Length: 168
Image 1 (cartoon, rainbow, N blue to C red):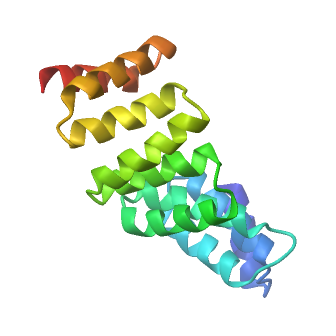
Image 2 (image 1 turned 180 degrees about the vertical axis):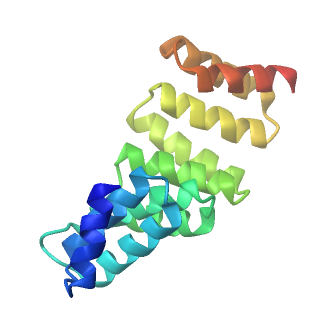
């Protein structure tokens, strides 16, 4: 609301700073305006600045693309991010999910296996369960999602996936 209006007025007044586009993207994302957020983050990326780390702007854009189900674009951003930070679990999770979104379950499984080697937490088990399920490996998918639920029993999303996998 109000923050976004202030940022829009600043741009109308002639300000076109990378920081303005980045913060506008954040405000748009919070309001669920994901397409506009992608556009703002893209403008921020087009004008590199020491005031806004490129990695942060790209990460926010990738998350906006995921919300828009633009998995190929998100995949490209997560791959670029992993070139900068190859062991970043957030980027690995994002890449795995983006690969699932582009129907690359084998690539997703490879990504989730890397994630598991770094941080074998509930989120990693969840992602790997999704990949195994998409590949038809239901026994392993059942084991992985059970482990995710065991590690985070309060997580409703994991429970829903567990039920879906059980039903086949």
